[in-house]
Length: 188
Length: 270
Image (tube, rainbow over the protein chains, first blue to last red):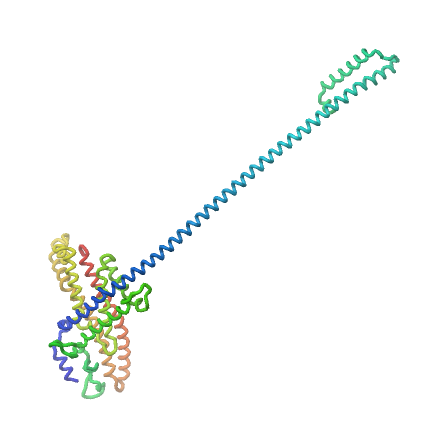
């Protein structure tokens, strides 16, 4: 045992001076590792890594395409929705306008009919009034002459004179009515 | 050859036993009897471990990436994680994706090679960090150094390369010669030396600490010394865990520095 120690101690080794065989073996060992890695194994794995990256990128591209499509569809849908809303609003507006014109037309028609009816009523009234006035004129004339005849005692047979008198009286009456239209209106 | 003989440790020797003393681990702990000799050249344990490292790394990556699939299996996933760690975390970071791509295999190989060689420190039976033998980190640093030097002149041309090496800057005025001398010294001699020695010394010291506490635990195992042995053993465990951390860190730093040196060669003026 101690012989070995002595032997080791006897060798004056400087730990910083490399023995050539060890240097050579170390380099050979390293270059074997380097050779295998550089020539075969790392290119191998690089190829695989590239492939993997491509696949992942392909997947990402696909996902991106799908997303773009979805976006497109969404936009289409939105624009369609907006169009539909526009259309609906337009239709509503139109309906409203149509309704308004319809109402206005009906109102005008009603007005017109009312007016017609009123006018017809007026005409009727006027006709009736005229007729009434006509018969009244005759009756009043007759009654007046009869009354006058009875009062005077003489028959105012003379038709011509009779007519003239009645006409004058009535004219006076009419003139009086014309000069006071409010009274005439109220009377109607 | 058993571990005891390597450590030059007498298995029967304990505290309070007369006639023997504590054999502290030292430089001799890093010198190995040759396993066998080929043509006058000795083949020792670190060499064996270095070659086994190679086999392990190649086997692992072969299993992981040999039949790489787009949908990775577990092993491929682990391999990819390691590969990506070096590629993105180190190479792309320092050199950029465009420039760095070319150096990725080199840096990946470098990282895993250094790491596994460090890892031997705490693997039972092996229990020796190969990188604590200067030849191994020096060889790797040399490869980086040559790569860097060739790249410097290839990229910058002869004059530009010299400017890069000397840190030539007219605005420095009269201190320029001094700066140039220092820069040249730094670039050509100090930097590769520290690159190798940083890894070597860390692994060397780590191994020495673990060894110290391990040997002490055994030596103290007698009488009252058993209590001390317990403390020493706990320290062995702690140091082993710590080493696990340091091994990864040192591999990382080694590759990080390599990346930075390469970056300096590619850059117009560092």
